[in-house]
Amino acid sequence: MPENYLIEVHNLTKRFAAFTAVDNISFNVKQGEIFGFLGANGAGKTTAIKMLSGLLNPTSGDAKVIGFDVKTQAEKIKKNIGYMSQRFSLYEDLTVFENMRFYGGIYGLRTIEINTKADEILTVLNLVNERNVLVKSLPLGWKQKLAFSISILHNPPLVFLDEPTGGVDPITRREFWELIMEAANRGTTLFVTTHYMDEAEYCNRVTIMVDGKIEALGTPLELRQQMGASSMEAVFLSLARKSSRREL
Amino acid sequence: MKQFWIFVKKEWLHILRDRRTLLILFGMPIAQILIFGFALSNEVKNSKIAILDHAGDDISHKLIERIEASKYFEITKVLSSDSEIDAVFKQGAIRLAIVFPANLSADLYHQNDVQLQLISDASDPNVGTTLVNYMSSIINDYQNELIGFNKLPFTIKAEVRMIYNPQLKAAYNFVPGVMAMVLLLICSLMTSIAIVREKEMGTMEVLLVSPLKPTLVIISKTIPYLVLSFINICSILLLSYFVLDVPVKGNLFLLLAEGILFIIASLSLGMFVSSIAATQTAAMFGTLVGLFMPTLMFSGFMFPVDNMPIPLQWLSNILPSKWFFNIVKAIMIKGLGFSAIWKETLILFGMTCTLFIISIRKFDKRLAL
Image (cartoon, rainbow over all chains, first blue to last red; front, side, top):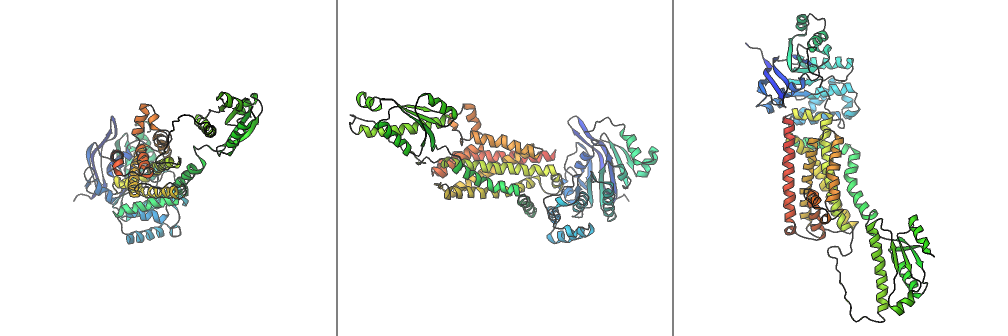
């Protein structure tokens, strides 16, 4: 019996004029795993995420996300994924609850569902008293956790997190990863890009992208053993040195 | 459809939470109408003038009385020699000087010919000319009275009627102009900033990954501004009726319908700007320099289009605001009906459709990349 793959990518390529941003990548992501997508800036991570979330059409190759083809069924993919970007993507001039109501609403959730879900999130995040506070006035770490909770408000089976921990201190990052792991325990599949190598250790499996190609794929342990390195940092550095691309 | 309303609601919250924007949205039309109505005016009143009376006789005294009595002039300097004239002009103390020759009554009665000298500060040519015209007409009135005693054999009189605006009120021109400016500014500036802000904040990304259609995103962002602009048309019309005494002579509903057409044109311009601009500053700069300035200068509001060089006249033809300005003037001031403005309306309609389609497609394409 074949494993249940949530993302299947075969020879996916994206070219912009003469520049090949993503060069013939293939991988699968299993249901319920935390899949780390590592690489330096400009390695092609964001382009890959954009193709998988249906924002960008691939130049060649195939990809299926939750069983839907990225080329022809982008609409269906969009309904079934969550997405959180580096910039947290909350409306600062709306209150905590208004943000939840808005994002819940655009995914077509009913008012009752939104209210139940909102109370649940506020309790988990210990934000009950901040329900009607403008997001602007929350500390960065809270905003980040709130943004993540909102990205999974509509219970998507798959969530893309594009550098979700940028600019946050290590303790807050640690707390944030606990949220991610709880979501994974509930069966959500998480596709995370990051360039913090310590975070790679939290992932079930990681790929390392260099110059648009996948240079390594496996569990953190496997990769360390393969490369004979003591940490993911060392694994990454030895691979990334091959890069001919300047930082974009 | 439900998502659409959720989006519009969120957009309202943005607008209502931002006090400064609210102030601009509702304060600007009121401020502009009041400023143009009361503070800025082309009419010349109470200009300071100097008198140099070499004659000092009956006729010069009567003329001076009349000049003093008019609301246009205020005699602030009485000079005693020609050499002082230059000095008072240089001080900037006066706009105009009038010199009566020494033998005023003698020359007038014996030679039937006398020359008064008017010296006008033409550093502002319009004001200079206007003052000379006013003064000449005071002198002519007086002359006509004198002629009463010994009539000329025949006279040619021009009978003048100033139609559409018999009182020559500046408001008849600027109310339509302010309407075009305010609508353009609110619709294009505010929407482009609102859209670009989502890009800058990173929330646009999330909206695009969501099941919302890009077209729906952009249209629902513009809806609140459409409503606000419509409220502004109404407040401008009310202000102009009650405060400036400028009524709508033609059909009010036709005027409002044309207003909505122009609002949609301006919203499309705003969307267009936002599809190019990456930052809020760029969007603001683009709308102010690219849309607002040309409207101010080339729509015919400030300077008559007919006097412009041909290339600038072409430029004015591609501005939606020029057509809207002419339409509003026709309906509001001249009281004309649709049959008189269908051509302008058709052009505006064509522009609106083109702009709308281009902007939506440009937005879609940028996302589809």
